Length: 283
Image (cartoon, rainbow, N blue to C red):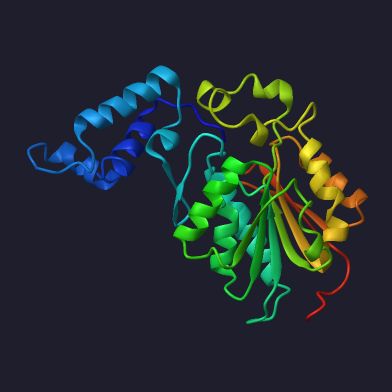
């Protein structure tokens, strides 16, 4: 879910990631107020970050420059969407669907369309060590940070980064992709105007605005799936909370099979998956 800034959990997050004081340790200080501890950054610097967050609604992740996500710590900044907790399930779902068709040890090629910070691509590369991944993004700012994050994870040689829009730039791999994931912009344009300032004023509109019905980018991703996926290949998408029926209909109209909806951490239908007809060519 898109979140409001300036809450007590946000302050705890700042104390943890910027101050180096974990949440359990913060709680212990309430019981032992005389116990000594050392901040990673000075109290004055932490106060400045917090005040700036309150005054400008800048995301703390941008101010600190980092964002914990799954078992990663990613660099983030203006120009790249901040990875959300619910998107962690997209990785688990994609791996579950794809690996059910892959024999152990068999290599595959996958793609992350609109990679942003690179969070999905890095997670897939770590989970599929025999694989080769291709990650695309139209934003040069986002792609630069994705490269930094992939390099920091030691995976830059197994993820090819390309500046491209959705399926463009993937022509050499069309018809060979065993797995494709995408978290495209899906917020309807009118809804973007109602988002909290911490999101609306600072996160990239390019990664949020999905057009009048929120489905503009999703249509482009789905339209290329039948040609881009290998026979038996799987596509998994994240979408808006009220788009499940529409996205599944698009997948079916594209001639894909095994179309299914999947729920997020709060039980909302947030993801859709489908498969191209046929067995994977290396099975």
